[in-house]
Image: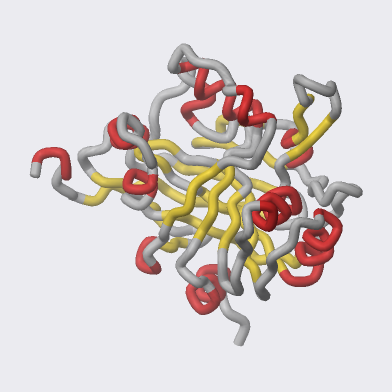
Length: 265
């Protein structure tokens, strides 16, 4: 019997995930909300954070995803996530591309965010990790091998990505290739795709182990935060649909679970 996408993840997941912040549009739009700009360093290197996902918070296609009751700014984040089926440590982008093709599988990831608590988290250094672990995370509807998704010479996938809330599109057009940005120093087109992430980790003498997850970061217009103030935060009963070419549609309903605010302890 074939395992569901969530059962497959629970069976193979090491418990370690690196989530990149790789899409310039998302980075620019959320920083503008805070009256800030994209820092120059973002254009020079991969950035992101390590987190953990408890297995009871791993949800699949059709499931209700629960947010804590104290959180008023419930958000979704539309990402692609890759699961390593073997270990790798390399500085070579071409070796990373071959690894992606033959030793990684990919699916859609709804990387839920509690934006109010996240802002509280980010007041301190080494932030966001606590806030990112409070709500359920959704994966699915299926895992697809890297060699089944078209990619260019840089290892960047070519696939459309659409997001809707209650049937109303936040992201109607544009695909994974929107990860490309213009280097402000050279005017070259560059990207922080999965291959570049793997190679960057090799440059800092680190790698990825079997069972590790790598998140692409949120695609531009892939969250409520991108669309403020025209959009409202998620509420119980909202239906989130994330469609990705070659993978399918991940559909989830928003739920709320009673949980005391840890800031009041």
